[in-house]
Length: 523
Image (cartoon, rainbow, N blue to C red; front, side, top):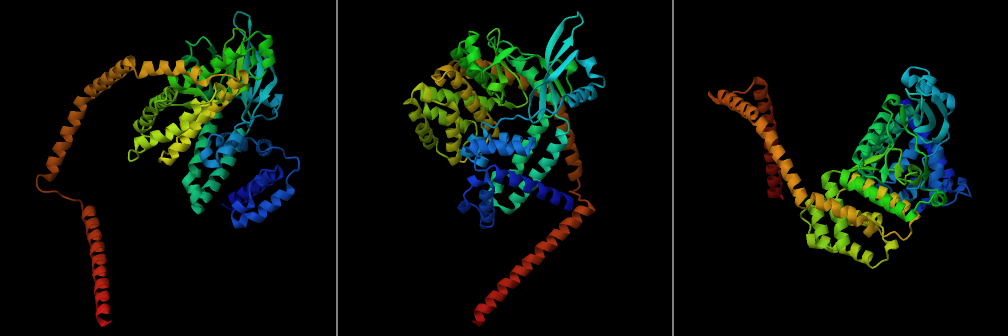
């Protein structure tokens, strides 16, 4: 225990120094800090770099210096404005997850260990790293097919020792969160221990590349009928917990607009595809790529949008998808009351609140939007304001909606960088209307009816067994009560002790009352 305390203290001291040196702690006003922390903040201002730059630059520099765990923590907190505040969350949204490569020899050793054979037996050619992040790096490689042809693949290799490093840092984060919740009411309200647990689960899933391979496969299956979107195929024979092999994408990154124009691509059309493909993933499939920054998006030779890096994915249940669709449709049609009713039907807002009052609050958000031009409208901002207003009506934090809103911010940013005049409402309308027609219209009613019949059929098949078990319970109850209810000696002893305690406290209360009456009489 002492060793853990010393280790935590050392990590905190280093983190504090880095945050102070990069100017992050200088952003905190001493007047707003607890009295004991004010001298430390003044010292932090003295050692801060003079050329620290903007707030975003300070966060990026500090978290990158602190290492992979802190980069992931920063990216995760960007999705939790309820914890760090809206302005800090916006600054963390641009945090880039880039690290130096860990070396060709180490990468080849990881491949050899994963497949228990030399790297040249797994890949015909295994090139140097082309990209490196906090958890893994990507190599370009080639494999020889049985017919003698060669196929180019992308090989993602897990960073050696990253699991141990994350486990150690997460242990520190957990202990700090537990201490904060024990001593500060605000930390208990924000449920910091739960925040750390969610981060730990997310990172542990990212560090098992088999799960990312499965995410690729599910996304490809969901979008197989979408001609404008392509998801790279997984090479399952060359994938494991530490290695993920997918087809190599020869395409142009969306961040390289000049190259896109030179190749003859229509930027406005690409912007539309980006926005609509994300909305289809979220609403139609309930499974969306949650890290759609320009580095993960390409346009291939066929003009298709290609998404890579499925390490972070989001899920929405049918209730959340209906919520999203009807919210967007309600704002498109300016049906504020229906939009308010959806919140109540989804169980997001408690029923003791007034639907009319909530509709008024939503109108206050929606009306100004319709008076703006298309390039001034942001659905991500709308969703953020909506979540902010719903907090006034006791709506609890919905992590899946926060992740959706965070991803929508990134997607809108990408689409607007390609087409600054993009009309978000007009672009979203076909996807939203298709989903509503297919799920809330007559077709959707028939689907739900069919699902209900299936559930009734399942219940009917289990009914005989249920009746048998019910009859057995009734028979046993009849036997137990035929000659009066018999209790075990342990139960009788427990009842006796409970009655004795009740009698003791009852007598004590009577003596206290009697003493009080005597005192009043003597007075």
